Image 1: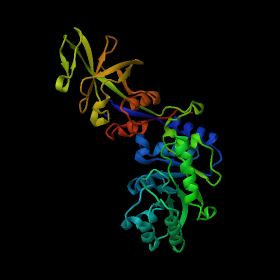
Image 2 (image 1 turned 180 degrees about the horizontal axis):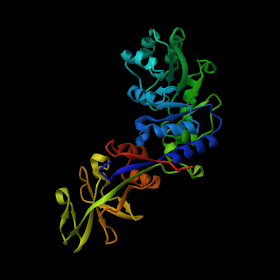
Image 3 (image 1 turned 45 degrees about the vertical axis):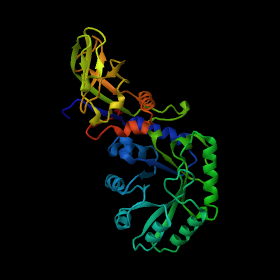
Image 4 (image 1 turned 90 degrees about the horizontal axis):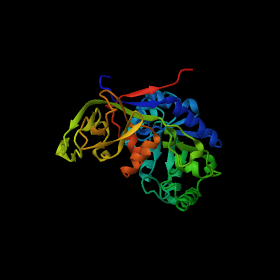
Length: 358
């Protein structure tokens, strides 16, 4: 690593977060760690290892590409692929013990003729209208098709809660899931999972459910302070140079920032939009010596500008993203969610794994 810009990933914090969550919600049999998008931008097998050590016994990813990458690192733990895959890739998936999601009658018919043995989960659409079966008649038809297959095991069934903060909508989804599966023998299906992080935290476990999915909560984000989850992600860089501006001099592309006083100090920091700090971050703060300083001017591909004072020196450490509270502030400013802030930090920013010595 020749550029002093990196992400610190706090492995012990991830492990403790998962342990806290399982202790808080102990009534499930299956705890899915959702590790898609490279563990929400945390990257590498070490975060996943901590999740498993903490008690997660199933992994979930978005695509078959992600599933295959994780399978190379973890040869034995079950992995669920959340997106449908091409028929031509079924052999690859099943030969690597990847569990597939079935979302349509067409997929069920295609996979029922598959000569390879494998497990599937059925996805129920309860209102998000993204993927899944929307009618209980289709769901029952798929169940019957797959039960006749000599190679396919219906291991699980699930849905996704799309607005867990809204109790009325969420309870409507719960009811929809019950109604959609009313024609199925749920007791014959090994895993029923309905809630992800936010919904698991906010609503009691449904009696017919034995699995839940942990996503953003593993990285410290929760709607309740009671869990006291820890920050897992910090982005740090350094001051490359300090420019002293005359009154009305400008900084960066298009000269959109103009010095408001004589001798204003501008720190040039070694991170930019190619690293995931997009131009919309202009105006929000970074931290140097624990103090906030504003980003000014247009953010460049590889560098950005910060208005500072005389206490800041060349090579000083800059916390571009400080902690989970800072991530929430950034997400609010960018009109987005913490998930996007985390996953936007690009692969060219190295991840450094921090683990306390015992």
